[in-house]
Length: 559
Image 1 (cartoon, one colour):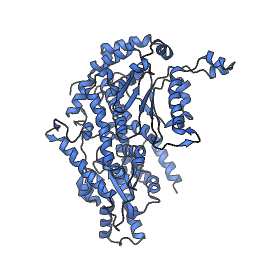
Image 2 (spheres, helix red, strand yellow):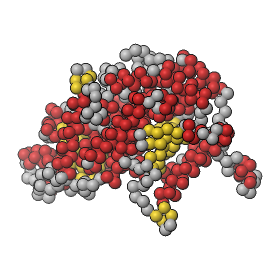
Image 3 (cartoon, helix red, strand yellow):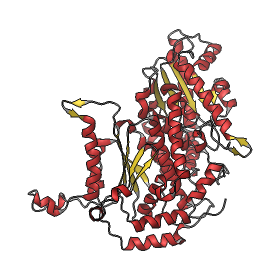
Image 4 (spheres, helix red, strand yellow):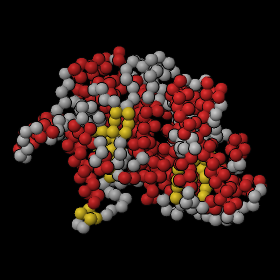
């Protein structure tokens, strides 16, 4: 892999720096002067309508940003990713999450490192679909012959955030009478509360860990296994014997893993293990076998529709010129705000309660990918990278943090997401509640863009110090994303949109967006500290003074 281009020495970067020095945003004026601005800066992306017109850009700025994409090789690097080049340089791996959603009939066949990737992906997808169909049809039964009513996914990071987000988003499609729950935190409260009202005889656990060694996941899996055994034994459903316990695990546990020996050691039949590959990063894995819980609860057809949505955006990025390429444009805008306006965070504000976990999902996708201080060749970055992504759904956020976005001193770009047709159309008397909801969606982007002048405030009768308090500066950048409805395909499109935004930014900054070494040190230290918490004095002595003091506090207060 060639060395990354230093964006700060490109001619486009110099031009952007010069533009920023004299830049004075004026959304009111720009819209007044150019009645076509909204049309020119709105773009189709599969089923999505993306309006970029309320962003702080002129034609000159956009042109310079597009040149930056060209000079840093965004299109070429994307093509290299699709071909199976080892873009993950620190782990010497291909980056092929896009292969997970290639149609079965895709041509030409994708061969990477001598392996038929298409055949591998379709084989796992067929196995996943067949298993999900069996569970949904009541053909897979628990140890006492009862149908599965609850699926509990045990995973963490990408093995949890993606499935739980998609489940919440597409819950209206759950049509088999099966509910999903998700356990991720090693805090025992998580497992205890998620299983408190479940029946062991009708519960299926999915243990999602590629290596089957993830500390949190395997700890929770063992706790779940003990919960299963205890519950079945207490009700008399199984005998108190090793054979009975082994049989129970075989009926109530499956795995998403490639470590078949470890899966078997746990007691899960390797036939019921669904694999994926080292070229699938955790935060890019919801469309792999990690989505098994989704296929069971929502159905294989819904899962395939989700994949089709991903693929539609992949194809848009591959085939669309940069000037109309929506993920590239949105990534470039993020660079503009991050590197030239000092923005340190980015709000994602879905006006859909079903997307309540979407901002949390994006936190891992964006911040684990681009929270880097070295480039892919090991050299230091030459500019700021990454933003803090955050948000809450709908009007909840309006009554919490919108004050900061509207009138605070920090620039916070925001993406607003909404849907024309609701999953649950309800009326309050004559008022269509979804229309009231969408009025808020439209009003917020309008208020952020155009603000409210002191003269307008005074014209309403306000005087004195209150005038300043009720004045809104405006020129707060937003992107509006609209779609007809939150369908499986639309959700796949939204996820892929942000994957490719992240890719664009990472390419421009010259970083490897596909590793995550920053999460490793804390894991290593936790294993060193665990004996100290248990009372090992030698382990205590090896700690720093602050950690020792905290350990002493723990030991003196533990009941």
